[in-house]
Length: 139
Length: 139
Image (tube, rainbow over all chains, first blue to last red; front, side, top):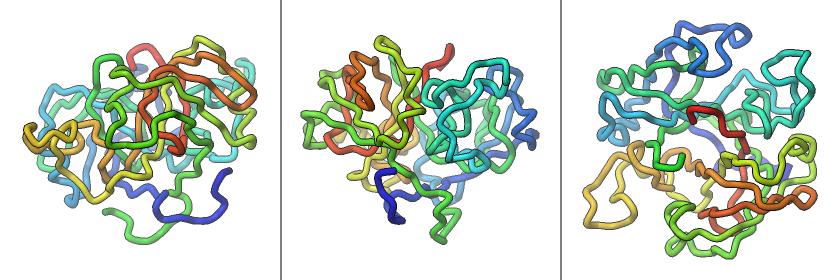
């Protein structure tokens, strides 16, 4: 890797956690639209101001830090299926990759203080939330 | 923030850098489709295996670490225009946010070893690359 030395400027600071009935990454859906449940995004009170313009119905990109993933993997069998040929991780959405950031497109169902209820999220309970972004035309 | 203590498991390890004629974040386009130039993504040789299934013409999501951004900002004037009312950062694509991850949708124009030529990238020269993902239906 490019930077062998620890550097706090490159450290993810989780802004919240996922609250979900999903607890086992091995059996969780691979993608939100494959039968994933609704979930809560519970944000740290310290980021409340950043959330103030979110509205029920909005579609968002949520980035998470898949803290149970392997970071030393560069090729995988897609969808954890040995029948699929090994593929470079940057051509897959595998959680296992050098920087295990999950990218999820969700819709806000409800807002309760610093919690957002969202549809179809495949991240497991306790997953750290890294960022939330609006969707732009062309995304 | 949730975790006050430094933790290397939460540290971004850049997998490469952007090579671009853009050098000044203040004058760079806000989004790739607003006149951003073509650029090279120069990857670390250590991640070569992860790149092996990428092909010219493919559309990708590139995640970067916007290392010149401010991480202590929760509301901004969108597009750095004081005429725009202050807005929570999670409803904007501002670079300034607690975890300054840039999300860019690009197309591969050429491949040269561990370098990818991509169209319409608004990230400035030297920006660390964090991840590359294929686009899925519904993204």
